[in-house]
Image 1 (cartoon, rainbow, N blue to C red):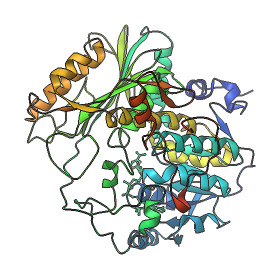
Image 2 (image 1 turned 180 degrees about the horizontal axis):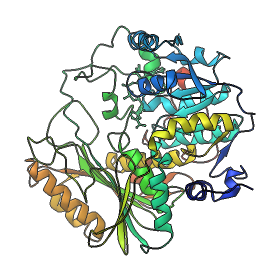
Image 3 (image 1 turned 180 degrees about the vertical axis):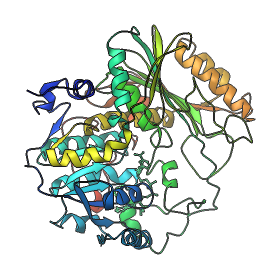
Length: 505
Ligand SMILES: NC(=O)c1ccc[n+]([C@@H]2O[C@H](COP(=O)([O-])OP(=O)(O)OC[C@H]3O[C@@H](n4cnc5c(N)ncnc54)[C@H](O)[C@@H]3O)[C@@H](O)[C@H]2O)c1
């Protein structure tokens, strides 16, 4: 019998309910594939290699034992050529592909690592599984709730292969240990969990209309399942790359970009394995006028049974003209979990500190571990089992971001006095709003004349992954949102794996 180290024990009990999971007996929390271990190195292809994908690519060139980079793919031929040159500089010569579908026909590839924009993730995950590849998909899992569910169901259906999601905090031993600490009851019950994404997001500038697509980009493929429209942005990063995050057709703003990591950790602490029963959001794009559509300031409150999960996005600095960002109990990008007898502070890199309610440090967990997430994927492929970064967990945390955005999108502009009145019965919402107003004032936003977009409090049928309730018009509008369900287009339709449930009607 195996002798467990403390870390292994904590890890096993958090991700899979103990040794049963390690033995591969549960499919709910530990995804196990039937195929035998890969012999020799795992042959990896990285898809979407501009920024995040470049990091993956370089790691698979020479830093991840047990794997080798055999192919790279990008629909921008300029990016593809540059990255091939990067590989050659370190003595690696991967095959190059400009079309993911062609790459999937290549039998010499075991696993694909997807670092394409968000709107490609679910479709490319499903296609990868259907082609018999193991998949590492960057966060978020999806652009919308329904396609994320299809990806989860595909992982169950095509279970000869595995899927690991790029929520790397799931490999943080510090987070695992501090969750175990909280669950031991030493701090009492959780009162709330707060995700924080205070990250500087500058204006992306303003164009006068549709922009030309770069001649090196296959724009039909780049658009994939999104609506085919010309780019409406041309800031420092040009008309195609990265700034898609700030357009609803492709991304979901910073709650879905950076925030998904902290959302996932906050939900993990709560131990909630599904969607909440309600959501309400408010915010706006304040402080500058640019092309982007998504809010740079957002508060979303999710109604979970155990305790509320509050998420705060701030893209403006601490004060107009400054670079520094605000902090909440020492965290800018992080999570605070408030319990009866103290709280846990989790940093962006996944280190955790436990404090009592007088802010006196009780214990710090500083093992690190986030960095091992990619190595964990190689291990998962070899052992045919994902332990950290389960696709279903990433689905729920991605879905939270989408649900928060849907409330915002079906909201209406209101004065801040009217907003204050509408949330007065919720202490946690009121408190977060009060700090948001102070933050906006420090950025010289006139909060007496500037309106805030206030979303309705939407009820959620967590099992069906749909909005419900008596306010029929609002519920219908929310259920029609492309962030709840978008089927894709033409050759990029999302395969329907599970027709009967989840936002499907
Ligand atoms: N885990 C993390 O901490 C982390 C950090 C950064 C980014 N990310 C994620 O990585 C993804 C990529 O982010 P980025 O900043 O590199 O974006 P980016 O826009 O800079 O790069 C995306 C690349 O994908 C390519 N691409 C688009 N569609 C494609 C397709 N159909 N087939 C092949 N290539 C395609 C683009 O041409 C581009 O080169 C995002 O989903 C982001 O959320 C994760």
